[in-house]
Length: 341
Image (cartoon, rainbow, N blue to C red; front, side):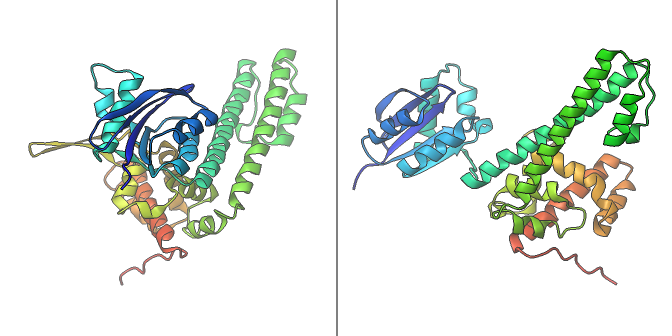
C-alpha cells in the first residue's frame, strides 16, 4: 500500500511555507514557494506520493484551497482562532507554523473550519460587496445632511434623499457657498450610482438559479425580507452542517461567551467568535419582524416584560434562526404551529 504524506501550509500574500512529513512524523521536505497557481501546481506534482494537507483560514485561503483540492487525497482548512499551539508559541516563524499545522493534521487534532462550495463563496462575495455599497451610501447620506447643517440651511430630513426634493432644495440654496453646492451635487451623483449598483446586484442574486427557490422558501416566514434570506442562504451555505438550533445561534453570534470551571459558570457579553455578517442582518431584522409576524411579536412582548429591549431583540433574532433553520432543512414553506386553545 502506498504511503500517505501529511502537508502543512502556512499561507501569506506572496509566499507559502510548507512542511511534508510521513505518518510516523519523519520530515520529508520543507521550504517556501511563491503564492501563484503555476508554482503550486509544480510543487504538488513533485510531492513523493498521495498526501493529506491543511492550511490556515486567511484572506487568500479560498483560491489556494480550490486549486490544490484536486491534487490532494484530502485538504482541510484550520480554524485560526483555535490554533493555540501556533499563536501561543514562544518561537514563531513561517516554517515552524507550517510544521505545526502538519503535525496537527497528521495526529488528527486539526480544528477544522468549514469551507463552503465554490459557487456559494462566489455569490457570497457579491452579497458582501453589495453590503459595502449600502454602507457607503449611508455615509454619503449623512455627509449630505452634514454639509447642509454646516452651511445653516434648513431642510426636511424625511425628504432629503428623495431625488426631486433634493434638486429643488439645491436650486433654492441662496447663502450656501459654491464649493458646498458642488460637493452636494457630487455626493448626490455618487449616492445614485451606489444605489443603482446595489439594486442590480441584489436582483441578480435573487434570480440566480442556485438561490431563487431557496430564498423564496425562506421568505415564506413573515418578517424575513430578501436581504435576510440571501444573507442566511449564502453565509450558512449548508444548513445540514448544524446539529441543533443552539449551534446555529452560536454561529450567528446571538449568545454569550461561556466560562465554566470548578462548578462556576460565568456568562459574558455576546461572543466575538461569530459570523458578523449574519449577526448584523439578523439583529436588524429582529427589530422589524415583530411588526409583521404575530409569533415573533409575542416573543418580543414576553421579553419586554422583563424590562430589557435589547434582550427582546436578541430573543426575536434567536427565534428567527430557529424558523430559518427549520425551513432550510425541510425545504418546505414555513407553517406556524397552531396555538393551543
